[in-house]
Image (tube, rainbow, N blue to C red; front, side):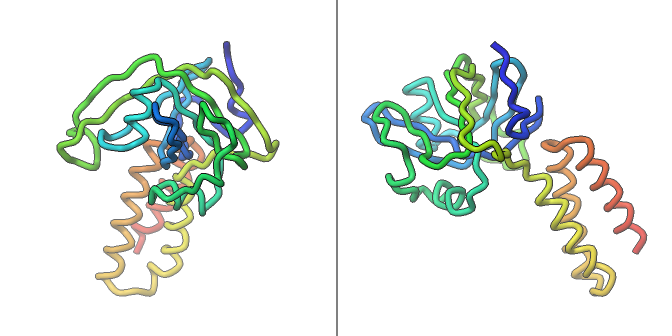
Length: 208
């Protein structure tokens, strides 16, 4: 079955930030901030470093939920592992955020273990590449939009550009380093329009 994730701003093969919710074999719910990629039709993908509760629950239950939200508190609490029970629905057999504008229930189909040598963050932990099939796609808010962090990097670059022209060389290097890192992220996760905007901004930086 093919799903139209464009209804929540999701394009095929791009990366979006979401809240992944899972439930343990003992019924304990958990939330973590992770990215996901829509592969087309009914397939999605995510990759998670070993050691997290989210990964353990996914491997134990073979399912997870992608919650589409831009709530800053939910992202913060989920990342810091302190999202309270009050944020979840009353379902006893699955973890779903109560006020999630949209969510996708995913059944795991394939798990591949890789090393982190080709990732920006190097370490001893393995990375689990998880491919799944969409079981259900629910939209609770017609204004729901998935978050692509490339836009945040572009906005940061634009804000810093207004200061770049008036600061000293040391601070300029700080801004340029941030810009190039954000460009790297945008080239990896964002759409062509955002990439084009960042390329243009980098050229403007290089004039000074």
